[in-house]
Image (cartoon, rainbow, N blue to C red; front, side, top):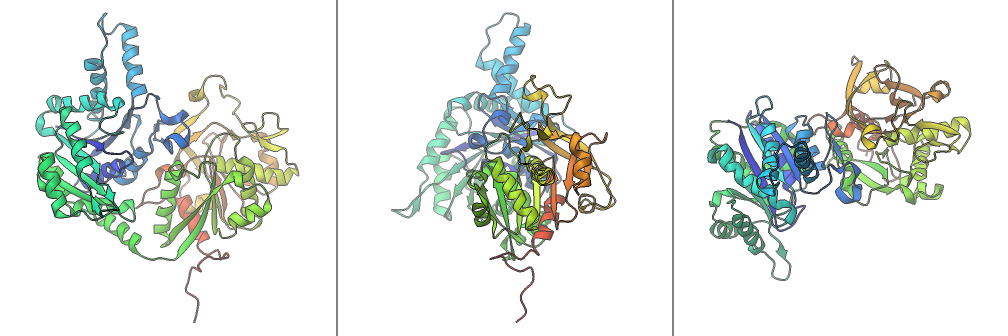
Length: 547
């Protein structure tokens, strides 16, 4: 029977539940178990697709086109499994479904209430994942913290699951913060005690407590939490801050989390294979030479807006035996050539990531021009490819009026535009390409080489509305732009590149969504493999200088 693990958080948000859940998933998968992971977001939005990145960070897209929380990206990276729309539950989805059923008459005139109707809908979401092929364990993270009003229906639902699925098939894990008081130089357990007491008041007794802290957690603190929170001492798991999130699975395993979970769920006799994680952790401890990469975007004040881009760069660094040093450049600040030079003079590589809307676009175009003229390796992701095309077309057509109709609907040279068959009045769902799409590669191009030479077809994830305008394809091709990746029908440009440049590549899709620490994405690996040998002011050479 499928086992369920429910993970809640206490004291404060952003305490590390997502990475903890992802790491537990990695430990279970290392033991040969099939794991599916689910995130509960209690907000009333149907999904984060329409939310500002400043509000909620990156929107992660699954293979079937669901716009989800960035934690779903962490789950995929850690357990190396493609998840789906079922892996993200929001209050918007739950209440919409319940109201739709009421309007259809499914409740035959009954009064619709949080219990049982809303909680039953939530539990149906849990159980739906259990029908996945070979689903051994369902891991569920409840967003927010215990005590939040919007979390209460979900906490009631996970309480009921112990009865529905059987007591031996459900495990509760609570992740809580031990704040450090500088004046007394000690970690405090009282907030965690209150958090667990609130959870118990709602009818849930945690089986395991993960204690997050920035300082070492003493045995006496573990004893105290064990006593006051009524859990065994071995079930109080210390989780101190580490230099890389990819060390967390090993830290939890060393603290006994893996064996504790499988034994509590009756999954005994499973031996973990964590060799991949040890290799990854070993890389992160090495003091390798560095590659300086500038990420030029409009949301850089919140790095989580580009979470998968950052992680993909780290993955590519591991593959190239380099540490990645990222400079976050606000594109709005690139108002003139002096500002561009000042911001990018040290960059060995430049990335322009995805985004929507006109703010900061001219700064991105200046950055793309800087990369082209100075032969700095460049990778454009979705919007970044469109910016690369706009910049090149301005050069070819000798006109600063070249643009995308997203940014200037009256541009005389719309090199980027909505597809002719796009329903521009049908709402965002009718104008977006979301999820996996096929792409055919052109032989003897950068794209074909980095994907493996013999590969002619790839699958990549999308999140875009606007596309390259084919009216300009022949003219830009004659000027030197190579369209190295196309949709199977040849209609949509997926990858473009400049062959007379060391590495100037743009892709309409989001390769960052499928990069893994043990399997970096080829486009990021290709960028770093070239950038590591670019000598710039203040950069480290790829090889030690001769004495």
